[in-house]
View 1 (cartoon, one colour):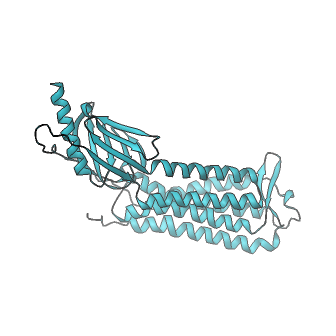
View 2 (cartoon, rainbow, N blue to C red):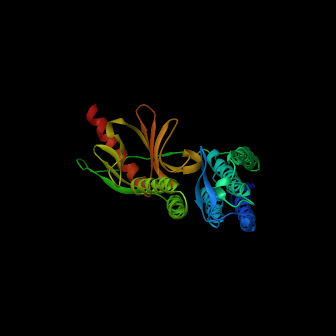
View 3 (tube, rainbow, N blue to C red):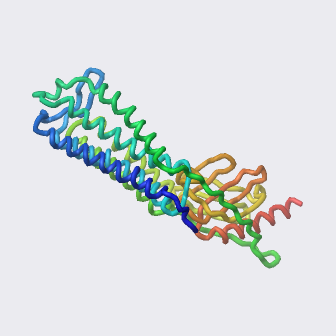
Length: 333
């Protein structure tokens, strides 16, 4: 596959990786220089009545590195490799822009919260954090918008589907096909990384400052971990009944009856650029189980809507499904 000769990859790295790391590193340095002028512990959480959460001063630079640096890197780790491989799409460009905007927003919030406390003996006397938030929001949005504009326009290339002929069989012979659809290492690693990052933050915050925030982060980490365990592996079956796609945990079941199959094809799927992500996806005209980019089985229903699932042996599954659909049509005649 030829990679477009443009600057999309280099600009994505500059905007989504280099810029957020530089911003986070600068914020950490500024915070470390302020430590001698800050109360200890410092205020880390504000409620309706003012400061209601505290933590050791050193935890703020740590959270800045993990949040303002780590979260943008996770987002860019999802988007940059497909861009370097030649994929183009709205979501890829958006992820890069969001990475730098989010990094700047978090760096400003965390650094600004310490600026409010410089020279104070008691962090409880810190003023409202709302002015810091009011400053950080528009600046983060503006930087994210600039990150969008600094990238070249993405033109997603259309992908053609190749129709597959029914598997040849002897009279009376029946066929079945079994396989698995598994998430690619990169998005799976990003999800696991986000889970670990949230778990570490929950532990740090729970031990040093705000138990309520720690429980919220821990609950989010558990939710993501549950989704990873449930929706990253699907079992695929093709038999006389049609196509069945079931999650490994058995909680999700999808498919197409043989009588509803109007056409079967093999196609190449680009998860982020075509479907906006990985997992169970829905776009105009299609529902898909996209766990990686690459070969996929594409089924066109009688009503024209498509069902797509990524598979290593998409051609084998397609040939068997075309055969059982042929049998179903013959039985109806």
